[in-house]
Length: 71
Image 1 (tube, one colour):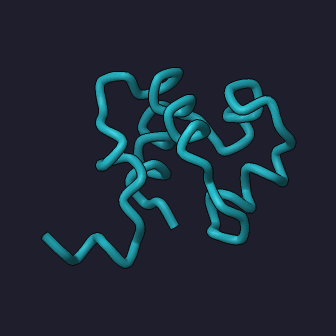
Image 2 (cartoon, one colour; image 1 turned 180 degrees about the horizontal axis):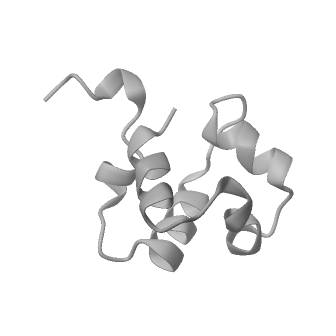
Image 3 (cartoon, rainbow, N blue to C red; image 1 turned 30 degrees about the horizontal axis):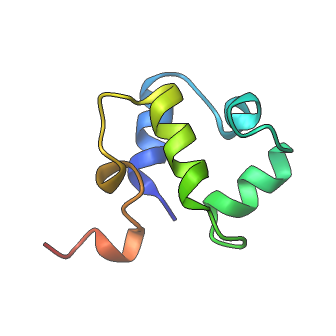
């Protein structure tokens, strides 16, 4: 659902479960949010970005797969 986020997590050697302390929720909940089964709230996106990727924009990190081919 968020290929740029997945790529950046991989570059840092992180997995979805490493977001548990950032979002203070279960790994299953994070998986549901990142796979599009549950909504990812804007405050959760800000927490991920500020904790792990402060040098990257929200637009880049959370661009959805279907948006990748568009300008």
